[in-house]
Amino acid sequence: TSALAFTEQGQMLKMPPDTIQLLLDTLDVYRNDTDITQQCCMVLRNVVLASFPGSSVNFDGLENKLTEIIDSKTDDIEVKKEACGALCAFSGKQTGQDFSVVMKMFKSVLDAMYLYRGEDEEYHSDFQSEASGALASITLNLRDHSFDLDAYDVDLMIAVMYMVMENDLDRVELLEKVLEIVLHLSVINQQVVIQSGGIVVVIDAMVEHEQVETIQECGCAILAVLASTENLQVNLCIAETDGIDMIVSALAVYDDNERVKVNSCKALSHLSVDRESRLLIASQGGLLLIVDAMKKNKNNIPLLESAFTALLNLSSDTQEQVLADPNVLQTLIDILKIHPESQNMQVKGLGVLQNISMRNSNAKRSIAEYGGIDVITGLIREYMGSAEVLIRAFTALWSLGVLDENQVLVAEKGGIDLVVNGMLANISYAKVQKQACGCLATLSTNSHNKDLIRDVGAVDAIVYAMWAHFDSEALQVEACKALSTLAVNVDTSEVMLISDSEISVILSAMRRYPDSSRVQEHACVALRNLMLSADNVAVIRNNSEELRNLMNKAARNFPLRCADRANQVLASL
Image 1 (tube, rainbow, N blue to C red):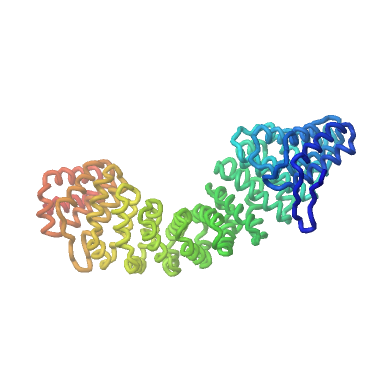
Image 2 (tube, rainbow, N blue to C red):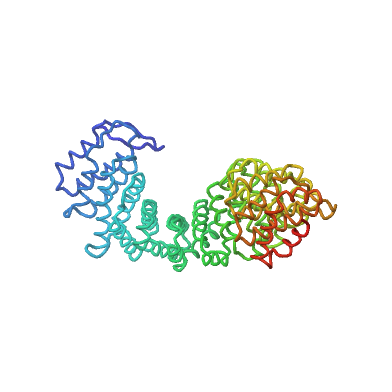
């Protein structure tokens, strides 16, 4: 029989299709000969490794024979070790295997690892290393199947991992394989791994090997998967067992390791959903480390999306001086400019800018200085049909527009036109309309903007929004605010002229929400402002009877908020 071998260059040679079967026949004949059985397993491993993908070599019966040896109560541990090596090669080469075959291999190897953990049988380091390599390959294949992972099996694996750490703490390559198994099991079923104590044992391994890059890499990957449940108790467990410390430390120490950075950012994006974890992450410099990772990996989309998610959470209550760091804003805005095609990233990035902007006036000013308004208006143009993007963009402009100089800049960048067009293009989305109305109300405090807003049809857009979403109290409030602000230009002493449509929609809001102090207040303000024009008073008098009833009711129900304005309206009638 010709034998398959590797050349010096690592090239593979063809072998007869029945090579494996000849070796299996040899095993059947010399099953009781330990040396021959061991040699056959070693040759099987090499033959499998050397086989061409899709070759005509017949592998039938191989996994049955190897698991038979591993399960045997009489075979020598060295023989079982070589059988695990052959099974590792077979599992790695034969992707897409039948579930029953993969599960049989999984049970066989896991039971053997547990048997030789150092209690029932003597702990055997080399066997554990070979078996863990096989099990890592097998569990990778299991990820392709949908099934209920047995908690008992995970308990066995966690017990084995503790024994490995107790007996072989310095054998890093063995611990790497065991962590890889835990990673695959976590992907298959996070909850089972969590319930079996997976969080604690993984963090223990990271603590014991803080200076070992590969251990930190795999540990961060596992914690990212387990934290993705975004369960408060899980997050608390990770935090209390120093998991956040280890993740932030890995991010700081291994800043050239892309996998560490990606998984650290993923883990922190999930862990930062609760306030206590956010404060802990921020106190350890996590936010700045995430920004630094983004700066050094501006084209790594998975990293950037996870990083923006983490920053979206962290920016909600991180100290203002951290957020005001020029490096933070410049990096975020630069990345948003580079990746306009990534909608998910843009939505989260806009949310971060919104959070930072809401902290103080200096932040609003800095965002504008670094080109944030340019980016936001550009994204509105790019994603005019995306309600998700527009909600974030309008909210950010609403916050930035509080500053006088930003109101001017938004107008210069065509922001007013874009907001109105966005309203008309997304009329069915109440939140788009609400945020747009709020944005227009803020921008219209500038006298010049007030004229621009009216000229581009904003009043009609606001009226359409109020009729389309008569069932949204929040929208009615912001729409009435916008109309009241647009009604009067103090600088020019001009009052916006209206028709029955504006009056009708304001009165409709008051009728529908008689118990809403905010709707009633802002409707009264809008009507009072509009009635500063004699022409408007003539239009409004067409509804004088209903208007008197609504004003009296508002003044009676909400005297502090509405009485003065309601009386002014009544006096004008």
